[in-house]
Image (cartoon, rainbow, N blue to C red; front, side, top):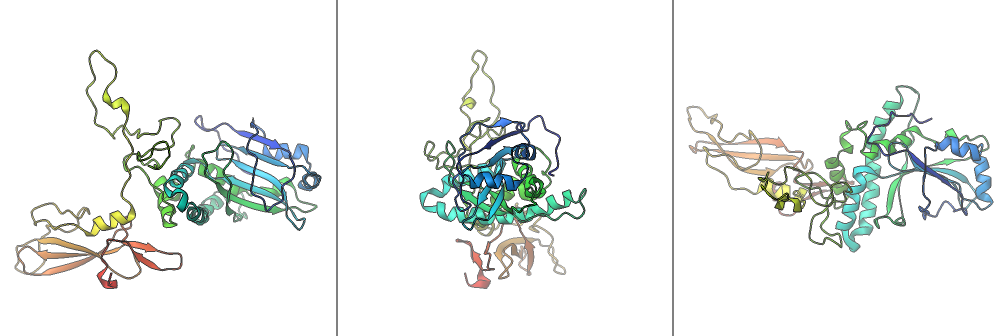
Length: 398
């Protein structure tokens, strides 16, 4: 049985609904999301009250009904439903829908992709969800093993469905397991605990999983970009943003119910003096979001800069790069001048080589460094290395 959590005062209320309607075969993806949810209905208790075992629910589906539970417990939406495959095999689908920060990043990326790029984006999102759960699953599994030492987490599959009615127009994304139903299957058998806890991990409301780096917005955006999903975060506040929403074309906005579409970071604008008689200032109009550099732009900026003199700050952007340090040559009183930074190696895209010349012109030197946040290219799933446009990689002849 999934573990229960103490409820946070800021967490969304528990909600659930159970519906019966004409049965849907397992191959179909369309879902009716219209019914108003009820609150504080437990998945297993409610389904068990109406159908003592999954096999009883299967009979109802075979008779033309749909058996489905949707709800959440301090997390993103979950769904349990009984499906029939074409060959008559009955399964219980356990699904977790993407929510929290990731949902906002995907929605903005959906607008950024535009009509022409959305099929490609769906493929990228599914691949990214697979990688994300591969990173998250060991964390969830280890947590559960504290009370169930023999537990092994199941591996859910990433999925997408048609956009829901009254939604933002983006497909519904998530993960799901299909539990085969046999004569002795219980409702407890149709709930994998790690998959259940994925809902809480993805919600972003509580702080239970703040220690997992892969769930932070910057890492989520980075993972999506690796799979060609155009995820963009505000350079000031870190919110997901798009400048291609049809109502705000050309203006960078974010889907934020509480703070509104513009940048709410108090440091985005300088503190303005307050008027004596009036109550409003120009700051009440807010500040648009602004995108940070793309990985390609960061790579170009990492390589393309003009060297400074030894007594001036180095423009390379890396603290303590070695610029201005005493020359190591014997009997030389000069200092090293950072003159170049170029990619090195043919496989490690974080590897760069710095070049230094002595300001007294006595010698030169090299230093290999790693810049994980400023890769000079990408590595595909098949191991193929691609150098970013605008970056010169002399060792590869690019």
